[in-house]
Image (cartoon, rainbow, N blue to C red; front, side):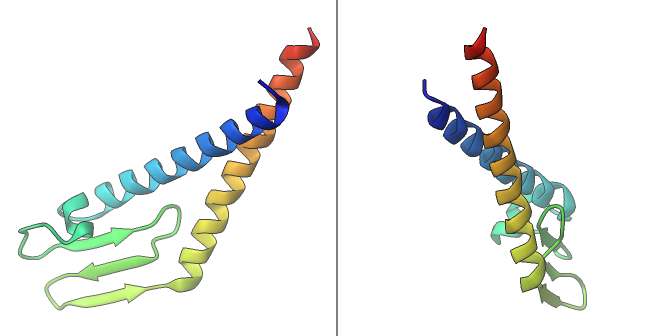
Length: 101
């Protein structure tokens, strides 16, 4: 494996972890779980939320309301890409440390 391959693997791992954390947060923050976010729920009074660490989407409730915050979405994507890049740098650094010895 080359250092660039290790960096790519770290980047993809960080991105995958961030996507999984966002899916888990959408499931835990929504009243009826992940089906509420996907629109496949049968709850009468549910609130669907999406986003981690910033909630950029919220929809539902007894007095229906819908909120979509584009700056929070863009900041959420930026945080996810930063995490992925940092994981790539760490993977590259660990690969170089392992090949030194």
